Image (cartoon, rainbow, N blue to C red; front, side, top):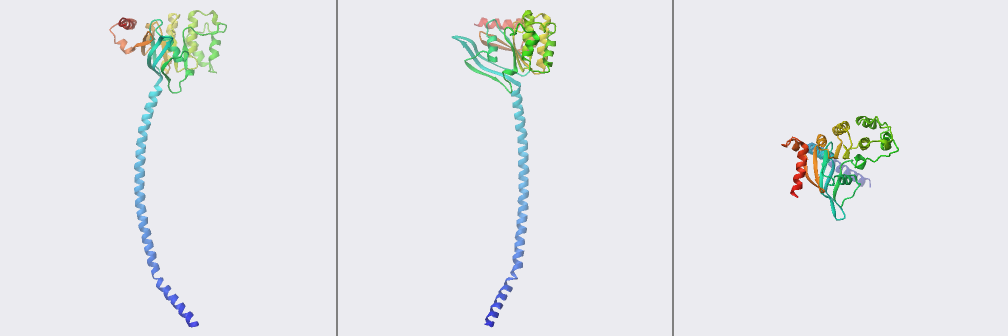
Length: 309
């Protein structure tokens, strides 16, 4: 029995000795394999880094292009405050506005010229939402809405038993009242602003109406015959106020029969006749005309359109 156990132990030791020389070989092979894998991984890592760098630069330059494009588009949209396309309005069977289209940009002053009943006031009411229209589109761009528009349409709407100052204070949103005081100063209204509006002359009421339209820092101001009833000094004050606000980026749409004053403040003039815009004239075109009197140039354009009919 002892002999058999010894034989078994010898056989086990012999087998173990045979196996032990192979262990270092396997270890070396394993280490060699690990080194190979490490080198391969290092090479792959460098390739991956190069790919990441190239992708980064591609995305960087692509992002620059997109940013530039977006800024350009944003600026173009920001510049445009109002876009009107093919506006049509009719009352019963009569067409009042016919395919009216134009744009108004930030800091631009556009004049509306036409005979009585041509559709100027109706167009202004449509823009303000005071009158509906049957077809076409009217878009206020960016953060613009009706709260950013000041207007004087036809006769100034004032409370006669309140003073001019109280009328202004009713709609003034500036708690400090700095803007309100500045408007009163610019239009030289100090002498009558604290009197009741029922005692105002036509010119005083017109000044108050203009002042009301300029409150709360509007981005767009629509004025229908703003010079009506004003004396020469008041006309100059209104003109200077418009030009000052224009320099600050405020846009204006102004209709007036006083063409001599209108051309002093406008960048372009829309000539409207029988509900349609018959011509859009820039100041550059008017100034390059052979006629020395700009009023005569505009009247000749209107008369020429009427003769074609």
